[in-house]
Amino acid sequence: RKEVEQDPGPFNVPEGATVAFNCTYSNSASQSFFWYRQDCRKEPKLLMSVYSSGNEDGRFTAQLNRASQYISLLIRDSKLSDSATYLCVVNPGTGGFKTIFGAGTRLFVKA
Amino acid sequence: DAEITQSPRHKITETGRQVTLACHQTWNHNNMFWYRQDLGHGLRLIHYSYGVHDTNKGEVSDGYSVSRSNTEDLPLTLESAASSQTSVYFCASSGGNRGLNTEAFFGQGTRLTVV
Image (cartoon, rainbow over all chains, first blue to last red):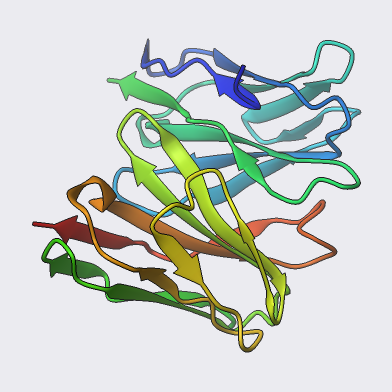
């Protein structure tokens, strides 16, 4: 089992749609979680951190479920500019030594 | 502004040659990472460092080496380039203690082709 797993997609949605991505992680001691966005042929950039209480940034909402060991990203009112690959990122807990990236979920938003 | 830069941005080399990819950050971050990205595999960790003179192997370290002689730089060396090492390489850095709870900043990537 991979340490961080994501549905690779692609997700094809119309503008204005709501779309959700999930990511599961295997290390129950993991301490911090992030969603990164990567545009084609570009470097990944931080989209948002994920907190236990859940957090929202405009149209984006991130949730963490420690019991089931997954994090989610919800995008409301999708825009064409949201088309990208979304990477789930997990930092392990004490004793862990590396940031782990999921393989990414591709999103295409259509007009 | 602080930044992280990679050079070269594009490189074509021949099988068997030694190649070094440079990564330089001005964030004064302790943690630096090298990843490769191939279609269908996402980002895979090659090597990482948590400080000067500290280096560690990642999941795909065979054929690669790194050294950390100062805070700013983590060069990645391909000892004898192979066609399987054709890929896009990303360097990243992050602050904090061993990379916990901190955002990682990425360089723009180096596209390496081994012919």
